[in-house]
Length: 307
Image (cartoon, rainbow, N blue to C red; front, top):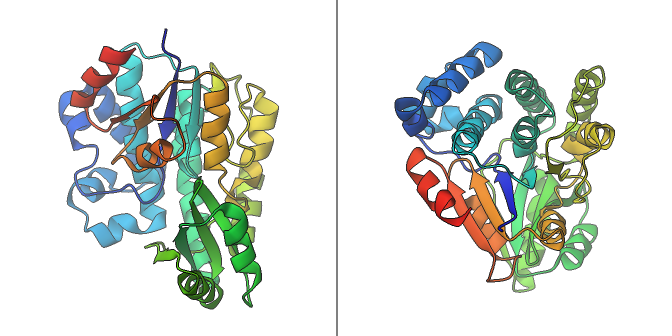
């Protein structure tokens, strides 16, 4: 029998119209959007459907918007009877994974994500930064590049064995990107509004940890893989402690996928807009691994055919 992991995308997967099919076709989708608008105080339906895209992409709006759509996709999978062996999420997507595992309620998840977006927006305004994807090199080579330039820059996301995103001060990130190109590597600046997963947003990390500290995390209904460790766990104490470190720590996505493969996972389902994570997983997992994307109700048929 197939062993499935559900993974949830974060910032960078947005597009105008995301979530619309869930709202039109399912009561769960309408309920999630209503809950999200109440929790965030934002016109998320209008932002997701009409934008403008530049406004949707602002991290203060985007984080609640992405997680709302992630949760719509999860609700659709749950209603179809899908019970994952494990869950994981990329950066902000980790919060959707925790809701799917029953560690957080959807309301808690959306309230925390709203705060996370506000804190990160605040720090990005105070400490402007940048992020760039380096492709064609392993993680050690990318780390070495960062050490060769002046200023604050370090790996942020270990996405595939040959793609690592760097983060930090604008000049330092640009210098590391230029050095990468000199070495024949690809360096693609990301359209983000801050240096996520870096010391430049350290105060946001501290404030987020303060908000998480008093919360009681429920025991997960399946394995969860924290971004900071890439190691599956069902210990809610570990899950909470690692989430408190998440904002200024790298996302260990390659390690996450490798660990799930080691647990015998042979089906990965991306629950959320676009198929960004599915593409990353295919570059890490063996070709025999089944990788599916669920972004609207019609995609559920693909899942039921496999599970």
